[in-house]
Image 1 (cartoon, rainbow, N blue to C red):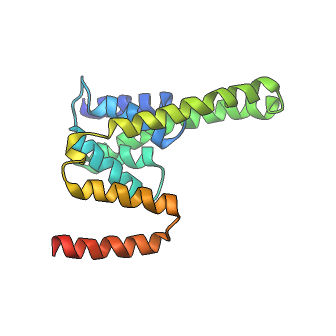
Image 2 (cartoon, one colour):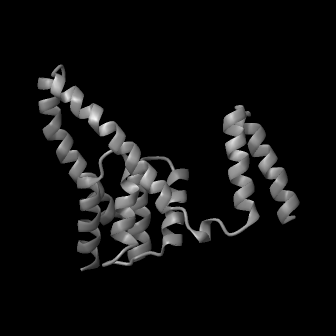
Length: 175
């Protein structure tokens, strides 16, 4: 029964998750953290998102794979969740590709894509906001990390220098 629930939950994510992996995160959170399933805590979800970002591949597929394994404790759960999230977009793209090549020069298709862009930005913003909680920001290290990242991005500091500085800070702080 857990496999069917897992498949259907991620099928829903794949079916309604427009805008790519980051835009799917609020939907994934709703399916696995919120009622009725309550499979993971928000802290576990944040950890899975972090791991999914570090591993190669789309974040939605990586998240589904990790959640499937975490919930069931085996590879079959990973495969079930991964198939659930992959099948709907595959079918939708098969159908839409026929229409896209037929109507790609249409002013209506351009308007649809123009309208979808802000919605995708909103979904990604919702994903970022949903991951902000007390457990992710409990000490001064998080504040230093954010400030360093922000200043590095604004001043266009070489990422390698930031990584080396973070390593040195880690050695100093954690010995």
